[in-house]
Image 1 (tube, protein in one colour):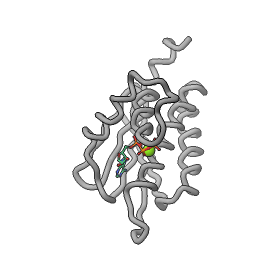
Image 2: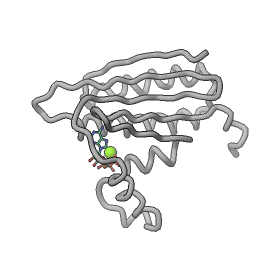
Image 3: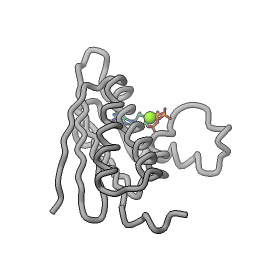
Amino acid sequence: MSQFIHLTIPAKAEYIDIVRVTLFGIAQKAGFYYEQIEDMKVAVTEACTNVVLHAYTNQQQGVVDIRFELEEEGISIRIKDNGTSFKYEQALNKNASHHNKDLSEITAGGLGLFMMQALMDKVEVLTEKGTEVILTKLIGRKEEMA
Ligand SMILES: Nc1ncnc2c1ncn2[C@@H]1O[C@H](COP(=O)(O)OP(=O)(O)OP(=O)(O)O)[C@@H](O)[C@H]1O
Ligand SMILES: [Mg+2]
């Protein structure tokens, strides 16, 4: 049976470390390796930073909902906002153009979603109302690590 932990924070940069600390506690308790937790922390930070930077205008007092869902096979982290949405496919295409580039050629923007995909086992993005990013890490991947 899966279990949930919910966290709601103001959509402000100074609260994102609370998400990282919470994630660390949950993932460590679940048995993830340190390296896996570090990867998840970067991915979750990117998703939360996107909410802070892109979802709400300065006039809006937005929040970010973070839901940690523990399952037998791993963890899913849902990062949700009710702000302005975006076209995920278009953003992905922008990212896809990074694949054949040297990192030094990539100057500004468009790295967040790319990094989430590189660091997690699965990334889903729902953009019907606001944005919901669902990041999944499988615990069974442990033994594949060098
Ligand atoms: N939560 C969100 N709400 C609204 N728009 C978003 C959200 N997340 C991403 N986006 C849109 O998707 C685009 C791509 O996001 P991505 O994180 O890949 O790049 P970036 O934030 O522009 O730059 P970087 O993350 O490299 O600093 C953003 O520029 C923004 O337009
Ligand atoms: Mg970003």
